[in-house]
Length: 318
Image (tube, rainbow, N blue to C red):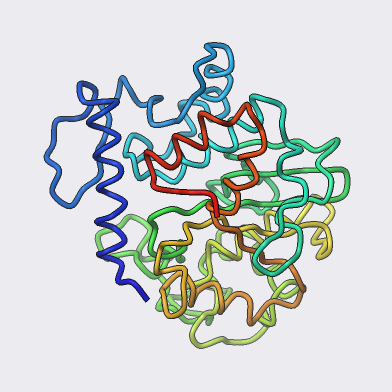
């Protein structure tokens, strides 16, 4: 397995080459050592690859409103900007059909077998889990009876974990919500999960999807390290009427070069842990950016995109 540092250096080299060629006067002015290029705030939208057609370019940019941009959107290693470049173009050009027939690593459909009558939105907020801050799904496809929650990764080393174990004594919610990493009653709470205590309904539905019992102690808490994966699973399957296990799936889009998504990598171990506990065949699926880009090569509208993905990110059709 290639070490992460070697992968990181190669990708950063691509990003800096792209930045110097296309955005030299628009960067934040900070040095190049061990960091990606970052655009100044007024040029944030230029993180996204856009076509030469002005109207289509505006349509791509509009797929993620300014207020939905992540903190590091202006960084050229932003997976959100990468996702917007690809899926925003699919929406802007009305070409959801290019996603038909793409197979995930497991051999199942990565998206949907037929995307007719399907909607695709970026940064979809989930409103039925009782969260103070709703889960935002990177890309969400919805058909009449199927949903796909797409989690897009690029240079990340891991999936998101539960924040309650990371609370520190100086944090305002530490006394009430800190968790020691075990699913058990602690710190004077009435329920085993700090999130359940404040009305979040994860554990109402998790036992429908995973071999995790909500009514007994679990040491360690299995949600702690699989947190982001499990939230995506809930986003794909939970409706206002409850959990419909067969109604959706999660698709992870990742960089095939990233060693953390290969054997022994941190992200891979998290994925395997979620997969091992999963009660629903096909609930979790994976697809590399490289294989997704291959599907775009047959559409002339995306010639600019395929070329840009290779030049900027080093992502080539596989």
